[in-house]
Image (tube, rainbow, N blue to C red; front, top):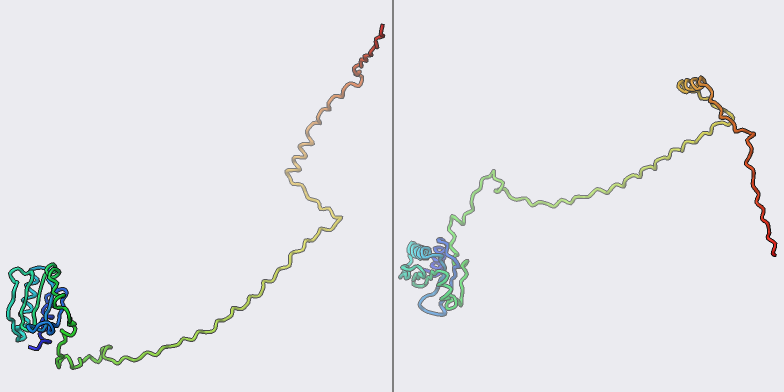
Amino acid sequence: MDIKKLQSLVVDALEDVKAQDIVLFDTTHLTSLFDRIAIASGTSNRQTKALAASVRDKVKEAGGDVYGMEGEDTGEWVLVDLGDMIVHIMQAPIRAYYRLEEIWGDKPVKLGAAKRAKKTDADAAPKKTSGHLAASKAAVEATPVVEKKAPARKAAAKPAAEKKPAAKKVAAPAGKVVKVAKSKSATAAAAELKKLPPKPKAPKAAADKEAPAKTVIKRVKKVAE
């Protein structure tokens, strides 16, 4: 089997069972025993065994040869011998301990190149799409529309509010007396006051009351003896 087809089958079989950290290396310059080596990790004994079984079955279905499998009893490190390619399926602690990448990892092979498959005629033929679907219609390039901004209109100045002339105070003409009529209550109160008897006058002080006599004290000078 062609080595490119074989490595593609191995990578697909490992991805089908969700292997972790798949790497592929070219070993033609290091040994004549095999041309490729693949390393992948499993999270448990059960998964490592399932990964090895997936590689074995897929290679056999494609007409390839499987020369042997080792490590299936423990499941910590399972090796699948495909002749031109060796597949190591390991649990993470075992892989970190043995570090096979440092021994065989001089020439890594990109997984994109390893998974490159031949296109079939059915894949190459363009798919027919219904005429009423929008996806089947040719896309029309949209032309950019330039929007012109209308010139800004200047706000018309509002006319200043006309000030109303202040009302002039009209002075009353001199010499005229305006009589105001008294109210009925004021007139009735004045009539009641007139009916009251006059207040008695206070008696005047007696004019003949004599003022108190003033006493005069004379000082007598002593004659020296």
